[in-house]
Length: 468
Image (cartoon, rainbow, N blue to C red; front, top):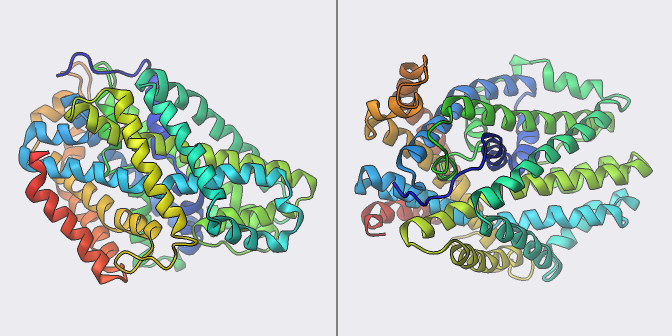
C-alpha cells in the first residue's frame, strides 16, 4: 500500500464527488429521451430495478477493489493478476476516449449559458439553426471547449481533497438546487399534468424486450461504471468508510438527478405540445424552444438549465480526467500536476479534432465515422459494457471471496447481511446481463470496420497490457 497516497477529507466530500462522477450529461439528455422512447414510467420502474440490483452491485464491487488495493484501475487489477492488467488499461482508454469528445459538449453547455442571456430565445423558430451553425463553426466551440477543459485541469491538479472534493461539495448541491428550480417551474405550467402522468403512470402495454435492454443499458452507463472511475475514487477512501452504504447513497443521488431531469423536461414538453428529440437535439434545441415560449422568465430559466448542464458535465469529466491522471501517478510515478497537464494537453488535441469533425473536417472519417462519433461509439457501444462485464468476472472469479467480505465489513467490524446475495449476483448474474447488452450494442454498430477495430483494441490490450 502506498502510505503517501491522497485521501478524501470527509465522507460527504467523497459522496459528492462520486455522485458527481455518476451524474453526467446522460442523466439530463439521455435518461429523459430513453424514458420517452420506451413507455415512460414503465421504463422508469424497470430502470430503477436494474439500477439498484445491477448498478449498485457493480459500484460496491468497484469501491471494494479500489480501497482493498489503494490503487487506481490499472494497479488494482494488476495487484491480483498481471493477466488482468488489460481490464484496467481498458478503463483508462475508455476514460481517455470519452474525454476525446465530452469536453466539446461541456463547452456547448457553457456557451449556451451566455447565449441564453444574449438573445438565443428571441426567435424560437431559429433555435435549431443557431445550434447547427454554432457546432459547425471552426473557432467558437473550440474556445468554449478550452475554457471547459481548463476548469477540469485546475480542479484535478489541486488533488483529491483540495480539488475534486472541494469542487464536488459545491457543484453537486448547486446542480440539485438548479434542477429543482426548473422542475418547479415545469410542473406549474398549464397542461403539465400530462407530462407527469406520462412519467409516473405506468403503461406496461408499451413494454417490449427492447425496453428491458434499454433500461439495463441506461442503468449501467448512468453510474459511470466499467471505466475505472469508481475504482479510482474508492482507492482514496479510508478503511473506516462503509462501502455498501456509500454506494447506495451515490446510486440514489444519481437516480434522483435523472428523475429530476425528467420532471424538469417532460411536463414542459407536454405543456407546449412538443416531441422529445434524441441526444443534443433535446437539450440544445427542444429545451430552449420550451423556454422561449415562457416569455421573459424563460431567459432566466434557460440560463439556469445550462448552468446545471455544465455542472453535470464538469463533475463527470473531472472523474474521467482523474482516471487517466491516476494511471500516470500510480504506474509511472509521475507528479500529479505534471500528469494532469500532460493529460490535459492531449485532450485539447483530441477535443479539437472532435469539434472540427462536426464542421470543416466533416469529410474526414475514421472507419466510416467522424472523430467525434469515433470516440463516442467505441466507448458507448463496446468499451464500457465489456469493461463492466470484465469487472464482474474479475470480482466474482479472481478476487478471493474472503477478501471481499473482509473489505465490505471493514475487517469484520460491520455487518453486511446481504453479502452472499451480492456476491452471487456479481459472480453469476451481472456478467451474463451485461454481456447481453454488450453483444447487442456491438451488433448495433453499422460500421463493421469500426466494430472490428474496437474488439481488436481489447484483444491487443489483453495480449500486451501486462507490460504497461
